[in-house]
Amino acid sequence: MRVHTFQLYLRLLGVQIRSQMQYRVSFLFLLFGTGLTALVEFLSLALAMLRFETIGGWTIPEVAFLYGMVEFSFGTMDLIFSGFDPQEFGQKVRLGAFDQVLLRPVNVTAQVLSSRFLLRRIGKMLVGVGIFAFALYALDIAWNPLKLAYLLVVIASMVMFFGGLFIIGATVTFWTVESIEVINILTYGGSYVISHPMHIFQGWLRRFFTFIVPAIFLNYYPALYFLDKPAPFPIPAYAPFLSPLVGVGVLALSIFVWRFGIRHYQSTGT
Image 1 (tube, rainbow, N blue to C red):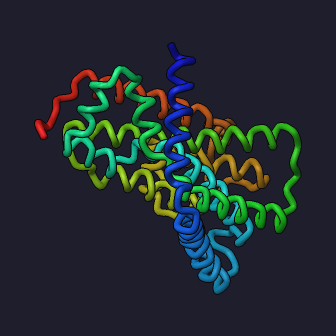
Image 2 (image 1 turned 30 degrees about the vertical axis):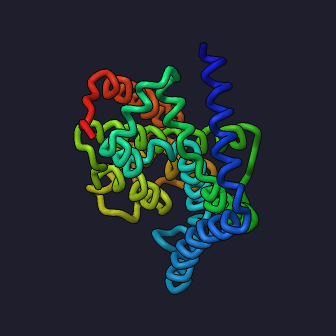
């Protein structure tokens, strides 16, 4: 059954991709626009840093290391999990479109995942790769097989973490109907925060992204390990290696919340 669901998911993705590629010029403009927006955001940060040379003791290439990983990971997540985007999903709930999903004899999660597959997010991913490549060129990082393998784990963990937040945000709309702004703060706001060295923020914000929403373990602590930089405040020796635990944990929690939400879903009557 699972194999059949996966095959159906791939077919539905194929339909999404073919429909978006019908108008190639429009697609290229969207791709360029998405990438340009991400690039301008980083260049604005880099230009601000030129005035002070460093931010919290981190140079532009070191910040680019953080920024590039987040841009690529979040862009990948937004490509895969865009069907669970709380704002778009909330409209489906409000208009009664989710009722149609429940009536089809197809796995509900697969339907939602394949309902939106925005290829223009590839522009954001490419910019993330470019920024990260610049960081690797400018930095003298002592890579080894363990670090290279863990880099892939960290990126996958960020994808799972933010994807899990999207799923939780979509589930919340079963009761709120409209998406709530706090989810955007945790997803888009969270990705912005971890694109910077976390020690530059006030203590209450660091504690929030450590104990409430543990995003600090996804990028900042692993970056200290990759760059061989000392932590500016005491942290456990294992802190840089908790990224996969956080990513898998949030995704697993989101699946539990999603299933709970489906079992208790009540139509808006639209």
